[in-house]
Length: 217
Image (cartoon, rainbow, N blue to C red):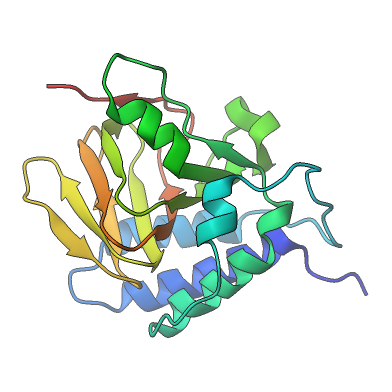
C-alpha cells in the first residue's frame, strides 16, 4: 500500500486544525467550511516526495522546529510541517523593491511554501486547485510583514509563536497558536513579530488567482 505523501499529511492536519477552530467563539464559519470543502476536493499524490535539491532558506532552517505549543491541533500541524520542510517549495517574499526599508528586511526574514495554489503559480506549488489555496509561512522575530491586500478571501491560522495582527482600520491585536484570522476581499492587513518567530498557514477560499499588493498610505 502506498504511504501518504507529505502534502496529504499536511492537508489532513490542516483540516483538523480548521475543524477545531470552527468551534471557537466568533469563528468565520462560512469561510472555514469553504476551506475544508476545497481541501476535501483535492486529489492527493501518494508516496514519498523528494526534496527540492536546495538548502532550506535560513529563516525556515532557524525557526521551523517542533516546539512547546500547547494547542493540540496547532502542535500536530507544526510537527507535520517541520517533518516535511525539506520537501516543500520554499520561496522568499516576492514583493519588488519600492524604496521603503521594510521590503529588504522582509525578504531576508520571511519565507513561504505554496502547498496548493491556482494553476497561475503551478511552477511554485505542489498541487493546483481553482477552489482553494494553502501556503505555509515562517516569519522571523522582529519582522514586519508590510500592510498588503488582495481580492482573495483569506484565512490565516497561527501554528506557533505569536504576532501582532492588523486588519483594516482595527488596532494591532496579539494572536496566538490555534487562532484563525479572516481577511475579507480587499482588506488591508499586516503582521508584526516580537521576540518569537511566527509559523502560520494561509488559505485562500476565493479569487485564488489574485495578485497580492503592498499598500502604502
